[in-house]
Image 1: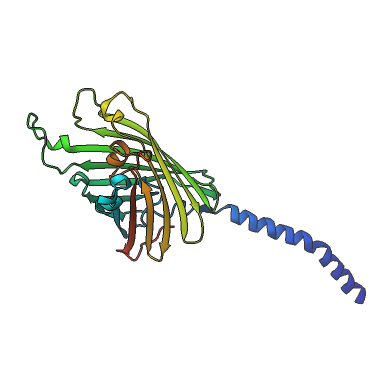
Image 2 (image 1 turned 60 degrees about the horizontal axis):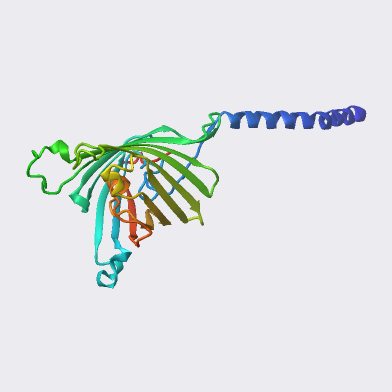
Length: 299
C-alpha cells in the first residue's frame, strides 16, 4: 500500500507541469477570443480645434465653451489681446456608441454650425486587430452677418459652407497619440471669380500625456489648394499648441493659436494671423459632460 501511494505521488508530480501548461494555453486561448478596444486616444472630442476620434457617450451631452482672446500683437492699448474676444457655445450629443451630433453658435461672423460624427473603425487588439481608429465628420455652418452684397440676391444657400473630414488616429503608447485628418472645405459662395469654392487641406494632431490628468497637445492644418487663388493667398495655415487639464467631470484646454474662429471653415480656411507677426491668440476650451440617460456609457 505504501509503495502504491509513493507511485501515485510520483505520477502526480510528473503530469502536474503538463496540466499547468494546458491550463495556461486554455486561458491564453480564452483571452485571445476577446476584443480589447483602445480608449482615451485623446482626452477630449477635440485636440484643440480639430476633431479627435473621441465621441460623447450615448445618452450624454457635452457642453463646450470655447474662447479666444485677441492677438498678442494688439499691444498694450488692447492689453495684448485681452480686451478682445471671440466665443463659441456648443452642445454635443451622443446618440449611439458610434454616432454623435453637435450644434454651436459663434460670435465670429455670428455663425451657427452643426456637425455629424460617425465612427468607422476603432483601434483594437486581441481577437480583432485594428491598428488605428477612423472617424468621419461632416460640418455645416451658416454665416449670420447682415448681407453685404447689394448687387447679389440674398440667398440663404449663399451663407452656407460645408466641411468634410476623415480623422485617422492611432494611440501608439499610453503617453503618445497622433492623428492625420484629410479635409475638404466647400463655400457655396465666394467673393471673386478667381476665388476657390473648394479648398482641400490636411490636418495633423498629436498628444503627449504628461501625467494622469495633464497632457500637451499640438496641431497643424496645411491647406493644399492653389496658392494663387486670392482666398488662399490672403489667409494662413493654422498652428496651435495647448495644455489639457482634467478635473473630474471637466476638461480645461489652454492653448495658443493663430486661429480666431472656432468652427471648421473658419480655422481651416480663414486665418488672417500668423505666429511670425505676433498674431497669436490665447484661448481655452472648457467642457462639462451631463448624463441624460442611465445608459450613458462608452465601452
